[in-house]
Length: 287
Length: 238
Image 1 (cartoon, rainbow over the protein chains, first blue to last red):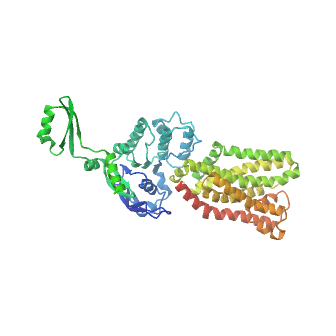
Image 2 (cartoon, each protein chain N blue to C red):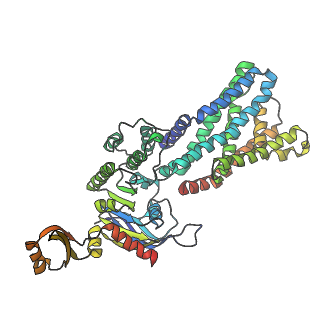
Image 3 (cartoon, each protein chain N blue to C red):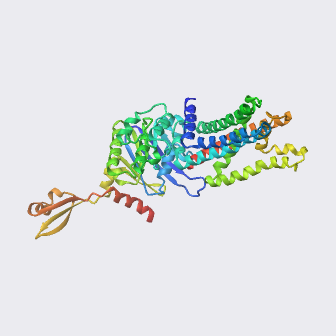
């Protein structure tokens, strides 16, 4: 297992601030995986991404990128890194193609961006000025721009924000495809649906510190209620009963209920990532 | 070098697409009409001021409009996370300002030479125009990078224009005695005026040398020590 990034005791204070924005954060981003950095607004997500993308360099602690100190990388770092910002960045009076041709010319290596433009459904609008695009179209073009140089490390900030479910799915499928190709993807988001569908590993950041770090599955196991809720019909009434998950196969009452009643639904007490997010970040806010 | 060429091409292409080029040319065409309708003596006395206005002051306004549009669109962020250095981005912007200034220079000087048959050393004039642009855009960038928005920049520009133009007025009105003329050279606009004028009438050599030195010194100090650092900060902060 190789780590793309290893972040240890990262601290960062903006020059005009008294208090640190990032307060001793440590985490690892495994190569070939999708890593999600989650947190509420102002938690320090964007600052962390700016540090990892070398936009901010006056930090304390250590960061290595594929084993080498991040600070030792010069501009060549960006030949293999793609960054998608939350706010789409384009020249509005230029067409999509003119924008992509301009940005593509900054890199040694390029993908077939017309093909990617087609995949995200923008081929027909490729010669239209970006200023005339809808928000969703700009988000998709932003995604294409971030991938122009065929990066092995991809940073995406809220990649599906502002997209309809159909286009969000297209982007998520593409992201999963890039993972299959062995690329490492770092997603900053507060959209729990994206995290559940995409991320292998998540870190919750709140108030500049790490609240929780784990895989999505382990988080659900940790925070989920270990119980099974059964809804059944009796005398034309919908009733509900809860059983402990442990030894459920030997629970006579549970087995008898299954045999004797008309079961409507059975749910395990699995919690959503949204609930975990509120638990982890909310505790910090109010604690 | 390829990337720098690509950036310059992109800057000039955007000047066309954002119609900044169109408005720049429109102003120059107005100058050409005025010069064309004037007699030779008037045209030769007007031409230096018009070249100076386009090369010096208009270039600041054109740079500013391009900069604030880019700031609004956030495109500087995309350049920061690309393999090109910020110094190349800045050089490309300066070259595009020189390009605009030169188009105006060609139209104005071309008109004086073709319509009125004036004889000037084009190479000297070209060199003078370039250093006038470099000096004024470096000062312009200091103002642009400190201004919150385009309106704030225009107000700052008005102040600077007034400051730079006042020595010319004071000299013209004989308020400043000729013994103190060297102080007036502190205005880069005046220094530029002296240089461009030297191609149409006799000017003391010391004034030409002082003006050249001053107009080279300003960008040589401001671009690396002030503009570059501030540009980087503003680009990151957005």
